[in-house]
Image 1: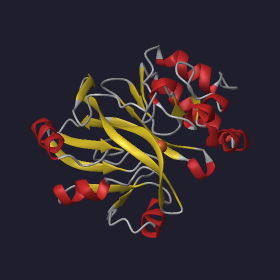
Image 2: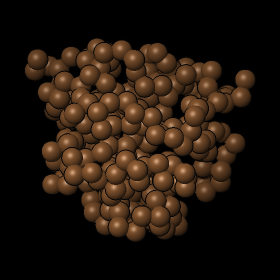
Image 3: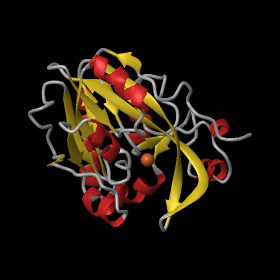
Image 4: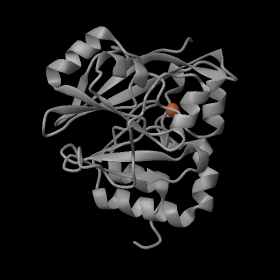
Length: 250
Ligand SMILES: [Fe+2]
């Protein structure tokens, strides 16, 4: 069975107060600059801030009709690269919305430069949320070595917004060899797990991981949004306990 998308793609799907997702078209793994025939899906999260500005988290491929739909919701203002792997389409959105601010994650500038991507990052994400969305979202840098990423908590909808930290891939939506790799690394729906590449760094950086876990628990998320695979239907507290384990300090 060939890989399938989370249809409909390129449309805004509301999931909570002031929060929605957009499922994108297929992306393809590239190795050494070469596009491999290995399709996978990604998802963008869109938060509408109190002042009407929109935050596009991990923007999917630019689409004119989607851009017009988003403009009806608010002003496309913030384009967020949560980790160095999710930035590829930010330049397209920048071009369409010249007033938007592109926010850089750790290492993404270098990665984009090496890959000759024309994105222009004007601000850097930090350990704490910037003034622009402090009232609407909290954030932190989740440890994961090379794969570390900024994770976000959308307050009004009590939603934890993750990119690659957790993957929950539906096996019938991907081709081989993804299917085997996902089974082997235990990242298949409904038992999605911490991204395989983050597991060793998280073990090594246990103190940082503990601090991150405490913060996630303090947020008391009720929903979890992922960039890859199916978002969890179950209680977010149960999911975070199962995946991140119990804190040593709780
Ligand atoms: Fe990813």
